Image (cartoon, each protein chain N blue to C red):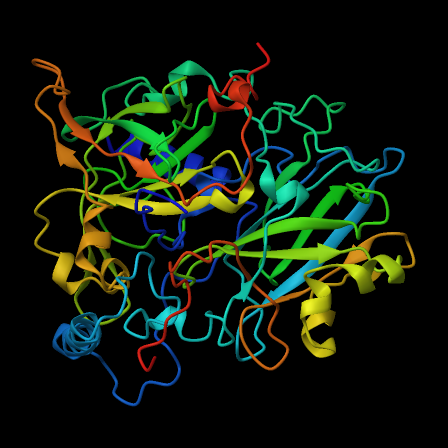
Length: 294
Length: 196
């Protein structure tokens, strides 16, 4: 096995050779203390949450998106706009989405457990759901991309220095095209929690990164799906950057025994609601045959 | 107005590099082919430092102003213009696309490319536009550009390079911060600060 492991690392480096990314999550330069602890971060998170609860009580509308300005995630401090986003009516190209079809994505790309010669380590799961727009219409024939850590919480990325084992049978990347009802389904491994360097003893709750397109480019979303009951939720600045509990809950999949496959894999259901569409739809588009030319 | 509450976005994180990029992702057509231009630029943070872990997407009409609806972006055949591309910035924060000058979708309209920006440390994707610099009358009449003051407006207009390409930088924060767009206007407050 050590031989296989070495081979995998080499393959990973080759895969990543064109990509240079600095070490994950360096500490922000503004810090005055040498090491920030979870208690420091939790106090900040709690204070922001308390102010939001107070604002809600005073009649403020619930927030639905993460805050771009959320200092507990230290890397966001210099990377968020300080001017308000400019209200704009989407025009022309923005009212359409790029088209993807089965020529773009092979059907087997939705099974992350069959990409190598052997079975990956970990708890096999099925993650399924539907991509819908804000009016509940299915988003058909569109691209869904996912990436994730392996069962040990390690990404197959050369800049991931977490000393957990790589799995020679797991890359952690999948793609699919949604069905006519907006449905998607992936077979994969439940990812492990992942340590990062935002602060001392920072751990990300287990998550799968999702990237989706709608029927308009303005609906483009990249997000993260979480697993129910994760004890790390209150501690995680990225999850907590969504200050509204109902909104956070929309990122948490539900265990679904109907989806569980006997003696094979546990099932999780997660639907994605895109932001509302602005374009006036024709009936054909509403049934989503655009973009699949096969 | 939407009936269902939208799923929140989250940061793309640091490890998209083995998942989102693909072969010829930034080549909407082959470099050197007739009509091809380079669109390039650098992504900066609020301290003026380059951001080495951002990834951009562009979505645009063809050179005649047609919005194409053709599959094949992920497996490019070298001939089909799909209008969509993706580019991870390099170590120096620079990105490059090979594409065409977009045509105006309506006669007399200003031609622009729609852009989505993702980065580690950026909590949610940002939308913006990059306009071609030439047609000043069209730019003056553009609904978005004419709603901006001249300093802000400049951040959305590319420079024409001597080789015919376009250069356009993105600044996530600061005095010359790029104009980023909110299309929803439905109370989903994309930019909320704790003081508000």
